[in-house]
Length: 231
Ligand code: DC
Image (cartoon, rainbow, N blue to C red; front, side, top):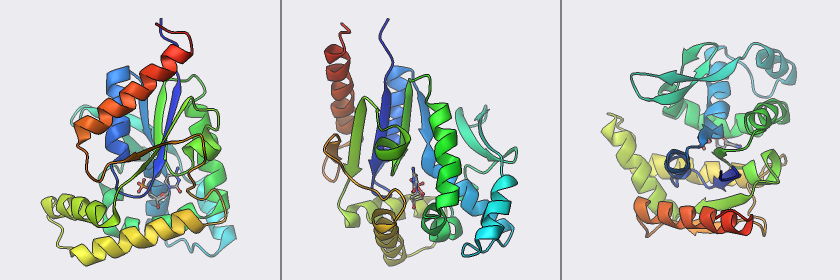
C-alpha cells in the first residue's frame, strides 16, 4: 500500500489553493482541509458578537466559546465548516468577513488555537491542507510543500467573476483592493507570515489551466512517493 504523506499548499489570497487542494485530495483519496475557513469562522463569530479585535481579554474569552468542526453536507456533497454546530461555509465567503479576517488571523491567540486543531487533524497523514503557514508552522515536516501564486490582477478578475455570479455587486476595484491588502497583512504580520522557504515548489497559475496545475501537482506527489520507495 502507498504510504500516505501530508501536503501543504500555501500562497496568496484567491489563487485557487482550495480548488487544487480539493482536487488533489479527491484523486489521492486524502482529506482536504481549508484552514482559511477556520480563520473565517472565527472572524464571523467576532462579527456576530461585536468582539473588539484590539481587546485581548475579549478575544481570549470569545475563543473559549467557539467550537469548530467539519460536517458532511449531503446537499452539497462536501465537508463544510461548522461554527458551534451550524454550517457557515457560504456565509464566511461574504465581504464583511473578508474585510476583517486578515486582522483576526494576525492575532497570536487565535493562531495558537487553530494551529493546534490543524496539527491534530493531520497527525495520521493523508491530509491536503491549504493556508498561509501550513508548510512553515502547521506541518513543517510535510513531504510536499506547494507555494501558489498568480498575478494579482488576474486573481482579482477571477474572484470578481465568482462574486458577480453569486449576485454580488462589488466592483472590480474593491476586490483588487481587498486582495492587495490581505496579501500585505498576511505577508507582513509578526506571527507566522506567509513566506516561501527553500523547501517549497512554486506554482504560478496565472497562465495555466486548472487541469494543468493538477497534473503538475500530482506529478510532484508521484516523484515524492517514488523517492520514498513506493512503486
Ligand atoms: O485562504 P483564505 O482567503 O480563506 O484565508 C482567510 C484569511 O485567513 C487570510 O487573510 C489569511 C488567513 N489565513 C492564515 O493566516 N493562515 C492560514 N493557515 C489560513 C488562512
